[in-house]
Length: 466
Image 1 (cartoon, rainbow, N blue to C red):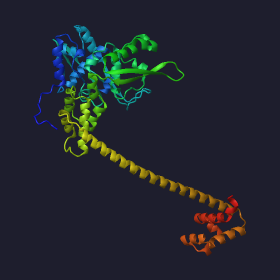
Image 2 (image 1 turned 60 degrees about the horizontal axis):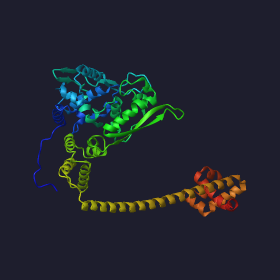
Image 3 (image 1 turned 45 degrees about the vertical axis):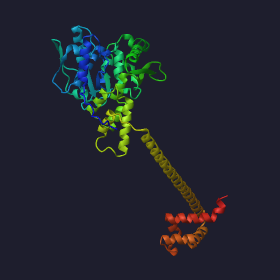
Image 4 (image 1 turned 90 degrees about the vertical axis):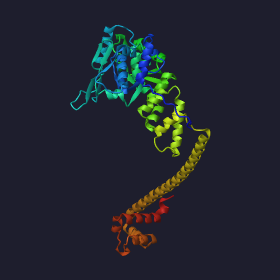
């Protein structure tokens, strides 16, 4: 299946190099990053979506800084880049450096906070509380910008676990603070198709300062929420709608909102569909444990390595694994299947379908046998339980009749039972002699009492059973 000609080896362009190349091509033309014809972004940790009370420009400032941190091969003490490049990454078109300093100041005031103290009680000494600035020192001088990020945040930016793809092309296109804030918050929930219920008062803190009318839902909906939803649907890679609910069934005050989400079928979404926690990404990450280098290679070839081609390679690799034909690295085999466009033939697929059908039929036959056997066993057990319950009841009735009888009748019952075949078998099993058995011994011995009750019931059965 592999081509006989040697594979052409070409140098891979890193996301950092690609972003710099795009900047050089577009900056002189006055073209903004949101108009780029190639994807620019990074895997952002989900907990950075918890940032609140931050305006649109400050969010862009952090996005640009964290993109640079995520792409640097090493971890320097300070990050130093051309100011025009940084401004292009955050789509800051103005030459107003005073305003840019104000934006940097707002970004420096933003913090990420981690605590295990519940919101309904005061903090205790044993509680965890950690607060870190999202960006530290910022310096601008002679056309360059330098900044640093707290060392505890670097691993979360460079190698996030629970994360989602943040496209700078999309994030810089927003013009409304609430639209950008909502977009940030919902990104981790796109694979699930909806968010949890969110308190409206909490959502009102996301974009920073809002007007006084924002506390009234009808004005909040008209002036902030609806315009934000329209902008998200127009410029982003997700389609978004929402549901609301009241405090209680007896209240008319709307206090909660939930967003419903679907990924659009666009070039940006194709990139995101691999980068977020979608099904294909989970298969590649969890089942095949692809490395960062392998994911980068897939991302760089998404124009030709579309979802169908990736799924074909996954199907082919699984097929070979099940047949025991992969001896070393399933991940490496999958990447080779992608590069050489290996896929299962129709004949192989038919063979698998036939084998699967035969296996399913065999399993169904076995399941029927087990079900029949189980049903019989349950039926027998049920009948045994019914018989045992009936005999216990008969013995009880016999003992009650025995106890209500006079002395002469009781003596006759005891004599007759000891002389009966059933009585002799019981005494033999219990290794007892009939001459030593008295009424008191029978009544104080549960087994003897039970069998005497059975015997008495047999004698009086015609009297108690219609």
